[in-house]
Amino acid sequence: MTKTWWLAAMVLGAGAGAAEAKDTTPCPKDLICASDPNSVGGAMMRAGYQGLVDTDGEGDPMIVSSAAGYKFNIYFYDCEAHKQCASLQFSMRLTPSERRDLNFVNTWNSEKRFAQLALMKDGDLRLTHDMSTVGGITRANFTDVVEWWSSTMGTLETFLKANPPAEPQTTPMRTVPAPPVKTTT
Image 1 (cartoon, rainbow, N blue to C red):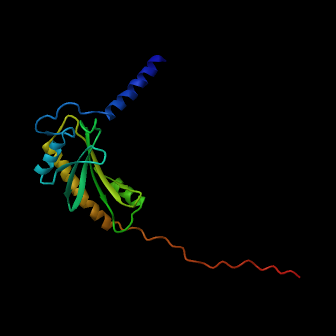
Image 2 (cartoon, rainbow, N blue to C red):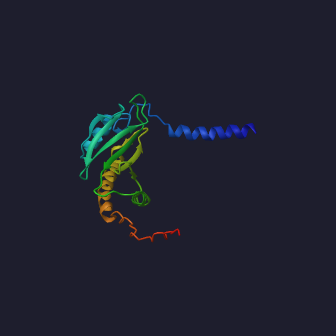
Image 3 (cartoon, rainbow, N blue to C red):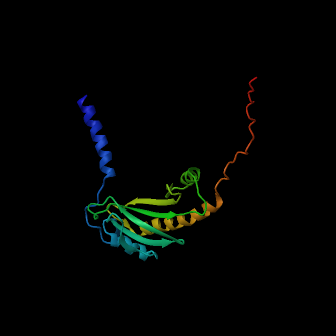
């Protein structure tokens, strides 16, 4: 019985470790790493995009950019004291001219592979794409991710036009007869 519990603990512990991977080594030369925000900003510029290195509201690095007519940010995640980050999230927020529902979002998510769409409480749509950079990624791979991201943002506009909001279901007003009036004699 002790071996079973030990094995279960090892399996559960192994899964937790992978989810909490940190990039503690310096970013290898010519690779892009979330642990080196300037490598991400530089890679964006080499790929032909804006790559302004900034800081988000929590003090973590952030890249400000635009593509396909949309502004977006690249957020840094899994950071240790706002440094040594291990992953990136490409993120854009869109306020559609017509409110969308969860069916719209679920349809997008079931048809798209790399980016996820979310419906925010205020009705805005948030498009994201996450990637790990632990150990570094090549310029070619990073540029490919950015090109997919740019294409996906353009695809969202097409998807919005092709999937207009459903007409609200209205129930025609009907007259309900009044209950009979009781008379007393």
